[in-house]
Length: 171
Image 1 (cartoon, helix red, strand yellow):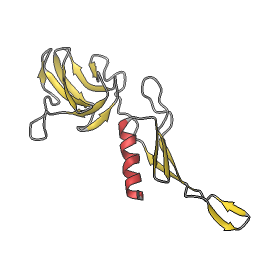
Image 2 (image 1 turned 180 degrees about the vertical axis):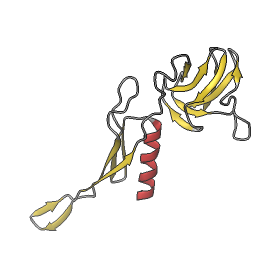
Image 3 (image 1 turned 90 degrees about the vertical axis):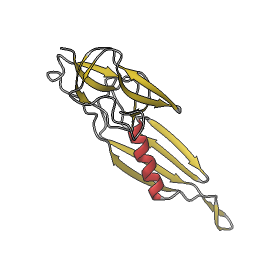
Image 4 (image 1 turned 90 degrees about the horizontal axis):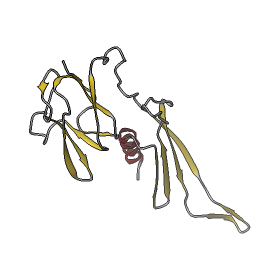
């Protein structure tokens, strides 16, 4: 595992919303700790800290001394705070939240147009997006009628349970 693989792993964990990940491959141990979050998802810590320890087998440096070399590297990756509208902006709007964890997709396939876009008028039961969880694609339907004001999640990104996905103006 090289530095590029580790950096990709850090980015994936940061996007996935996982809080702690411990991984051991051969003689490399990787521990990734994501920022602590409150119940509403506000970020308390503004960066992800990753400690990487490599533990090769013991090395004999002299007949009476055994040394276990350890290398520690601290890697920091910035984490963007979640985009949340202010209370005044969404006072009259309804938020559609994720009903499961998974990967958010705006369309049923890369070749198809998004189910909905900002400004679209939707009815109750209309498909809004697809969430992939464990290789299953779950179509998310609107529980209300109204106009799409804002799409709060980028396409093909990991999402958490109850994460806001759309803002809808019901009037």
